[in-house]
Length: 469
Image 1 (cartoon, one colour):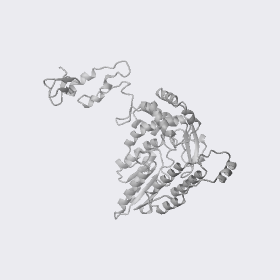
Image 2 (cartoon, helix red, strand yellow):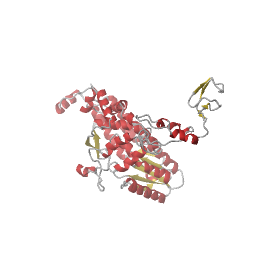
Image 3 (cartoon, rainbow, N blue to C red):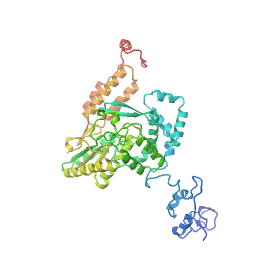
Image 4 (cartoon, helix red, strand yellow):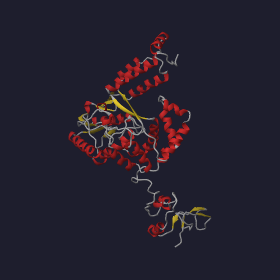
């Protein structure tokens, strides 16, 4: 049987994948033959099966014809190394490792890490020969020779005492490059009501979404309640085995999975808290667990946190079919007019967290009427009004006071001080804290210290580089 084809609208015998120019049987002078004239896909199954692999890498014929399976060609399973270079389901992320390991990907990550941060010795050493340095890291990644990871620990007090583990500059650079490539794909798989480390879905969008629900349900005659759930020491209790299972399901690129596995399961420092320990400051580092926990503040931590809790989102939306469910990382809120229904939701989600994800809810979990107000992402929301949470307003006042003091000592220029103030003003614009807004405007005054005060400070603190006069 001859292999023939032609235009979809006529019977031109142009041949499969051949160009038919000035064909008498064609309705056009430039006719691309693309329609197979073979009777049916089943008749050519033997023809497709007869193609064999060549010995050299990248020459698998079936690999180059996979896209044709939707145009009348039968799907053929291929067992070669090329076809099986990726794993995961059909919707998983594939062929991204070369992008995150490339020089361009690392360069973009470098610019993002440098932007707005103070420079230390490691960062400053890169200014002179950053191109050579990035090429070396890229070559190491392509060879699957991952640079060793190192971490240092420090503490912050916003909004409470937290232990932050910061990685070295090279590890931070690789994490950021991987985050830039993978996170956009991960975000597409998340539900609409998840708000954390997602573009155009931050804290403001989260509180606006919750407020719209509260305003809507408060107009009904029923009494509405909310269920607030918070996971106990979430980042310290993430199970490595479960996280890698979820990673392999979402990411089908073996090299990318191996990179993430190296920094999750083979870290040079333990990050996990044993059950019963509620504060990482109450335990020695040698007693930390190796098989659970990821770094807080790491380049990939929030993306991995979203991946880890995505099954909970799917349970709430698909199985339980909860219409008013919202999550910001490990904080979850559900609205309902039936208190017994909220108790059932809590049991279902808590059992799922315990049995499947090996997590537990903490003491903040509670069911209350929405008329009492809901604390969420730094705000407190009532029907028809939104205020800053008290701890948020106190932290804001402390920060503005520190900004004025730094400006007075000429440690901060006017542009940065103004930007700090205007960012808080923009935040207050979306809530009903009018009196607090007026107070910070009246209290925020930028003045430089006098020459006499500067000389006294020089004698007290030593020589200092004052760049504003």
